[in-house]
Length: 191
Image 1: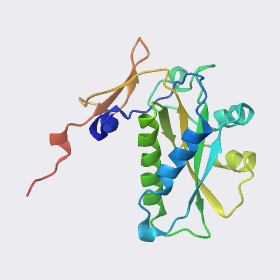
Image 2: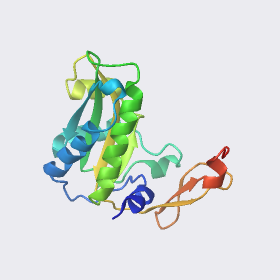
Image 3: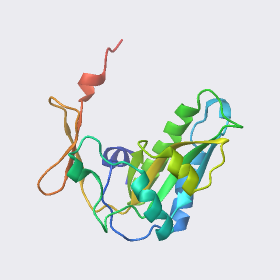
């Protein structure tokens, strides 16, 4: 898959097959995040890889899914949950003022890397920070920033032209539709 295909194919996936992702692939995704641009090259990001079924089961209810969908369509059904997670942490002993940009760059590298391996992903920020800290015994000198849910896709997500709402939606066949503004709508000016 070439780079342009990779960019356009990357869509959020919230329903997953239950095939496991190899630890080597998950480590490679973290490696992609590790080499992302970091402001002033201050490398404050660290990661937790979650693959054990009993830990995934405890983490699953601590993340909130698909805020734009009706309540009954948000959370993946039993047997369609993520098969892995990557938790992005900030080591506050190393942190710099631009670290949120670093998180964005690292997360995007993980998301694009996942697509390259045929893996679906969901970048999540609406999470129960306190309970996640307790579950993973994360020391106070870390900030928990984001979680990326991963698995082989068990749904389709398609991009469509923005009309009157930014809200994504699920059709009767279970396909996600994600409105995006056109290129002409987002270019403010050309000089």
